[in-house]
Image (cartoon, rainbow, N blue to C red):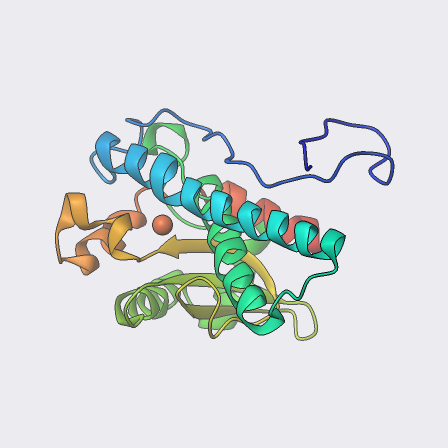
Length: 215
Ligand SMILES: [Fe+2]
């Protein structure tokens, strides 16, 4: 049986499972850009479902290993990639948002501002490319700003579902453009949601991710 461990030497502990992270702000704090009802639904239902999905597969793997049973690796790992991708991306997403009254919106700061200017020429050009990536993601997906440590370049990534077309780079900033992320507030007008995103980006958090990488 797997139980959640708290601290100590991880080799001595029971195996860990994923858990839903708490938000750094109240559910109503991102309104009107993301309404309270939408944020509750998105966090407690959709994100929770990826946490549950990933944990169910981990438990299935443990059980199969214990019993010496066949896992069906291809299908299992495909499903695991989808659920872990959903969990990790949502966790990053909540953390790179902030209410406008608490630092959300504005422009990039610190080393991230410098990296964006160097790569894209200007913040406006970056915004345009990132919005185009978000608006043109086919079906369900994400737009992400990543950083390649080999080239020291920030690169935009357009993710299909939670795990397709990804580069194994470090993620600095993500925007969820699955319909569940905006439909309740914006109906089919994804572009309006993408525009609203700029008012609640936590640039400080995105810059901290980059500074940690460059240390
Ligand atoms: Fe989502």
